Length: 365
Image (cartoon, rainbow, N blue to C red; front, side):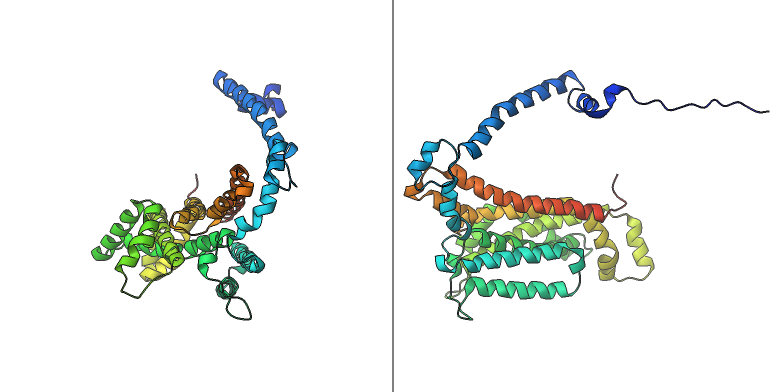
């Protein structure tokens, strides 16, 4: 017996679901509420964007000689940034020596970029970091090779922010890994110590740790022994970030199926071999997004060191605004440093997305 089967041709979707009109209908006008929100947002943009563009670019003054001339334009005074950009970027570092922090910043950024390229993920990357950090230290401190010695109390601006963030991330990550493993340890003393540390640090704001490192820590040191203020701030940042890294990594460890642990046990791997070869690679892939969020927050939180008198990028901008000859242009100054923070944070975010896409795991839904 044979059955005649009619050929059914696929019909195109309705016109209202195709092209630009279809996208507008489904994305912006799919319901009365969405339509209302779309109209409201469009109205706000029409009101704000032209005025913002006019203030930022059209009426802005780029080459004024003084503040009075800048105010007459009615727009942004980018001549203030042109006048004060070296103070904002390098703080009170000696003016004639500011090529040194500039070169140090370029070296730090170049090494970070190299660390993001897979071709450099080889043992010699550690050597590159060691050489780069030594060169950065020589450039910033000086005192050798004919360079003038500069105390780190005169460091400031972007190089100091990069140094605090780079060393903070580099040191907090391995410390956080150890804390996460310690919290999941079967040894009660180790587990209790890690739990107390993590919960204690996560229960207080970074500002309080910076105050304690700056004010209270010297009280507990032996007489005649002191730790540099910049180093104390760096230690506080590392301790703070490590606690958050530990909790994030612990979440990744808990996401790994129990069979992975049992499989590693079945082939006779030791605990550290299991962690290094089987468990941690999978756990870190799972927690890439929250880890990157912590790193971005840490980069921005370096601005809090201003409260203990360290001349970071934010404090440098504040000092530039305080100049009586150019007073009244704080908006331009903070927009300038906001763009700098955005460039770095957005770059980190985009890289994490590409890394996450490249290291696709089987745990995504």
